[in-house]
Length: 568
Image 1 (cartoon, one colour):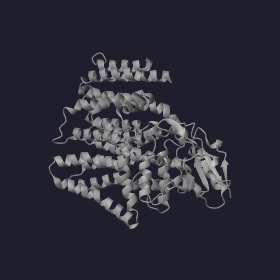
Image 2 (cartoon, helix red, strand yellow):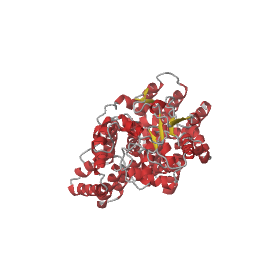
Image 3 (cartoon, rainbow, N blue to C red):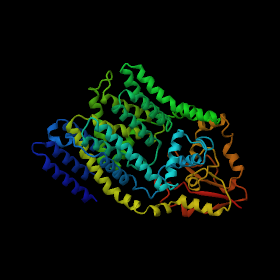
Image 4 (cartoon, rainbow, N blue to C red):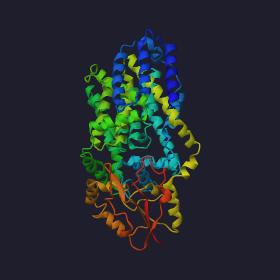
């Protein structure tokens, strides 16, 4: 594989020799030597050394003239259908190399369970509680219906969502920049999402669809754009409450235009969906839990103090460990941001200042979230990809092009094969999912309907198409006192809720003896997951065959599956 990379760099160099004269254009030689150093350098502080060398290369490349890069700036008419299928193809090839793992992130399992409740006719929060906005569960429900509950196909449907967001990004950039720059921007965005933690169907991805669409409508429509933008942002916040922060740049932009009527129209569009949703919850006597989910609990959630700049550094280092070329492309764009601030005006908002506000808000979202979750930075990755349109120095845009091309080729060469292998055997992949097998075994064990209390591995409930016996779907929410107290206050759960659930003897209990909390393995603080707490009417299932390497990408040797079944 190392020989492959060396040949790849040599081929790239030969290509640049054909297009450029390296004697007259020493920047090309510098890029080549930079890549050679990256290939051969093996030291503990390699990331730091290469970052410093990249900064030197960045400032030297700023002298590169536009005439030398005519092929980047020359606009070519390309059919948008072709662009979409290009983006969809690289999305599928970079998103499915981990398809054989059943679980990447446990949040997705909880969203699926909450959505199954919606499919059964309930409103979000009526019988199952999860922390995200109600629209997320309706979107999940639609996708579950489309794929008939097949979890593998559900993952593939979300690839189409990611490809759609990247296509909107392409359309945005293509309004003012060349086709090449637009393709670079949208490709970098997809590649940034190819990290293991980026291949899950997080709420942020769906929010990005509506936020990106709002940005595009702002570019394309005239006076008719304000109400649609307001509606789109309402839909985004009905998926993830925190995405309301991204309304700030629009409000600031319209305010600086001096027309209060624009803001009133936007707010009108924003309020209408909420009037409909709140009326629905009032009519079903569920307004209290809606308010708790949208106001009480989020305010307490943001009071944590876990996010810090050191974790941002760790976040960036993960990209270097994953793919150094992608890291170099990302750092090049990030370093370009402060280089353009001095040319920015916030009096008459232009594209540059507008995009800077979005980057700032995306970082605010991460720190307000205050839990160091990487998926809180997915907004930041989109905004950084969008900011490529503001890089004015030809040499710097050429750096981004070079590194993005190398990262695309290397990621496809490493992950594309695994993706194709999984895509060619989707039925086999699905059959080998351990929790799906556990669900089948439980279904065969009972001759009549049964209930399940899942305090871990709740994806089983999705396969069984059952609600959790617990009102709270995601077990780690039991570790958050502000959630418990908020739901107790409005009488949706009782004091000592878990103990009372166990004493009511559900048919199946799924739990684990150990949990990892803040990086440390501890005895399960939610429940004493041992045979001792159950009556003689329960037996413990042997679950060794389900605890396989296909279960979870982030291997947790402490999280053994324990299943207790009430005897018929």
